[in-house]
Amino acid sequence: MGRYVANVIVGVLEAHSPGEQFLLHCEQLDEVNYSTISLVFDHALRILWPDGIRNSNALLFITDAATYMMKAAASLNALYPKMVHVTCLAHPLHRVAEEVRPNFPEVDKLIGCVKKVFLKAPSRISAFKTEAPEIQLPFSTVLTRCGTWLQACSYYCKTFE
View 1: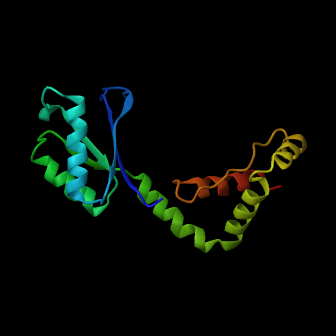
View 2 (view 1 turned 90 degrees about the vertical axis):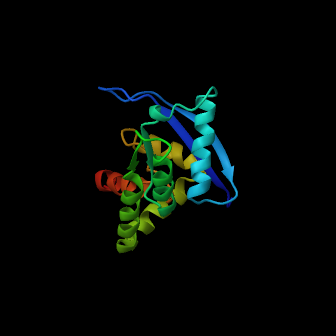
């Protein structure tokens, strides 16, 4: 829809297990740059600590490796001295998958055709489940969702016959 939306997710850092995470703040932005991201982060922490931001309690800032995120992390570092910026690996891995896909056009065509066959077709889904009850339905790829194309490739490697 051409909108820019920033989400701030917070959680408690646990020593031996992942802590629970919560969506703290969601904001639609007119533009995306380091200053708007820094402001969204600041707004979110004001929600978390309405009596005053606890600067030393903000420990991690996890983002993708976009230039504006790197710059936002650098500017926020002055306000939150204990905060460490970590870049997520999901986006670079997705980019690798996007480089692999064009090199296998026939596999890509198979995945796209099977998706069309089952899309909005309850009778075909039912027939598939009847014919091969031990096999799960094919993955429905979403090109903007990390890894779904590679998951579909793995599915066809295991179940093609």
